[in-house]
Image 1 (cartoon, rainbow, N blue to C red):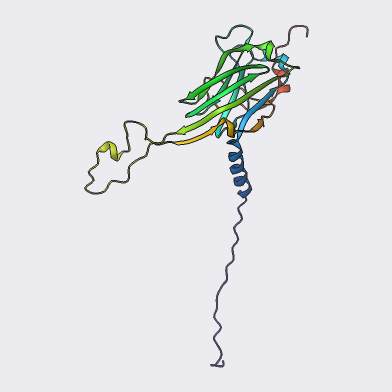
Image 2 (tube, helix red, strand yellow; image 1 turned 90 degrees about the horizontal axis):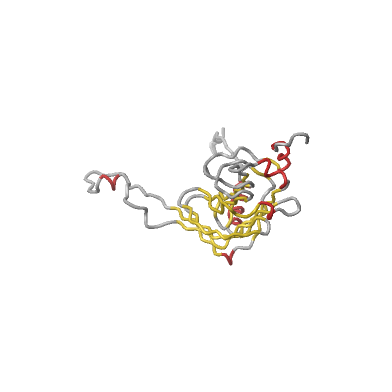
Length: 239
């Protein structure tokens, strides 16, 4: 070998490429979250209304798909065609289900009937009217249009913050070390959207699921088409 030439060194070149197949899902999730903050009105059309009294006796509800509006996720419309427990005969009940920490000032509609609602959800649950209106008065052209119009809404999230890992000679009390406080932390993350900033209309799919408003944490039993009422209805003898 010629000592004047540079020595050839052995080596390896590694090349790697990372593909994030979830990028589209992540971007869409963020866009949906931003649009949720602008939603003012939500509509849910219930078809086959004539079958409802037969399919849903008093105390049984059909619920909309979960949705977000005014920056609050996990909302749901709960409709009792034959009324919730204690409702007057012939009346239907309508509720809005929301997560803990939510404050909603809104108007609920069933057809042309409307009722104001204003509630702070200290825990997950539903709020509305047991005697919302007479069932027949909210049926139009064989269907019922359930509508939510948000006037003001926000959600407060209160977190308990634990203390740092104790060090030798630590002077804090046991409760402070364990992160136990006598009351909630005096700061909260608040999502507040005033009525005049909301403008979008969200139309929910014409689907329903069975879930009791008394148990808002219960898992929905799958979504159904409104044509499934025919299978659920109790037909009279000779029909």
